[in-house]
Image (tube, rainbow, N blue to C red):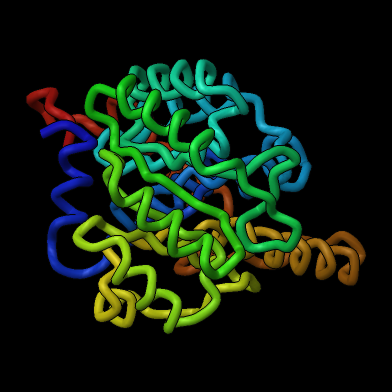
Length: 287
């Protein structure tokens, strides 16, 4: 079964499928120990790769190269990729979709924001005219062979949110995402207007949307949940704390508990799993 077919099967199954945001190969290595699916977050990638906020700095060749590395190291994971607005024009969007499909991506999210774009959970977002976005979306849908396509709107006007969600659900996109949903009541309203189309919900710490469990999301009819930043924010907090402790200790490293602590042995063991030969059975079949 192809990667996109596996994700579609997971979406059709009962419950809400979680996809964990990763921002580099190390965060992906940790996430793969806990979850079957990854989300290549634009927020995390802009922060990790460029040291910049998520406002449109990402260059599409960098995303493609990253996804290629992910697929080589994680042959069985769902890999849903944030491609922002398709990097402006429809031709580029289609080229990126073809390239990502060629390197093994499972799916992409295409948004309707206009430049300068913003993270979906901050103020100041502006959206393209609906017909302009739909034209781009249709070209992407015609270009993909099997790739899962998530149609995303960042509309903020209440009428526009529901209108766009309904229009996106009427396309051949596999899933609909309304980003920055502010309440459970709005999830219910969006679920109603998209009909039978699968629905995706984006949770980000400190963002505009309510913090909900997978069980709660499932009860609301949400089929997929992306967690954009838990790895990034945890790394931020842990690194800041570790370096503050190191400074306070006059540069003396802490003792590492061999049973539970992270040191050279634990990190090396984690990374060795990503070597191709380590993922093969004696018969040479990927596990």
